Image (cartoon, rainbow, N blue to C red; front, side):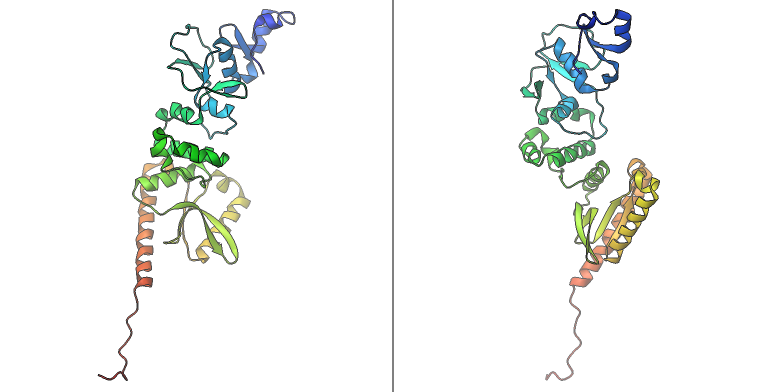
Length: 289
């Protein structure tokens, strides 16, 4: 849906009818009301008013074809510092030094790296990593590209394209922050001839962290499947700790989960040491002295 002016449709309706159907974005440019929450449509209207503008942030990622998680969808463009000041009713116009411009589907956009840098100041590290995990799953070449960006070095050190959900990514980052290493996403486990993949697993210690989302509690069939899967992992000799969103959202619950995990890690490490320690053989009664 392209932005329009009243003059474009005045032969079809009067101003009252026009105002009932369309909403103003900036200056004389309007869009249909049902598209007011669509950041790309709003950005198109902003670019009609500011042709030298550049789409930034999350909107630039959407224009490039990436799906997001639950990030806000406010359209944002940047314009040269000397651009005229006009009241903006939808979206956001910022005045910056102009970035490197890429034309994507006929629209002027920043690069993926710059789009991330636009948004990262408002996000904590675990949110940043979860977003990049989600993006690189959609484009395997993007992982290598972002690794070359110096300003993203801290985030890329923690990114793993194998992560399959935001909570899994957040959990992995928090474990690293707590000094707990060795847990990686989607570790394969052989369970009686069937390969299962754990959300986060430490194959040396045989400890798995399984995230149980809302669907686990709302869908009886999914809950049954998850329970069967957990039982298979335990039967294969793995310790399975189930994690829910309240465990991540509530500090006290997170602390209890960490305590349990550290206890299981300590127990598993002791068992590994015992397996590696050779059992002393009794003296041979027939050995000559």
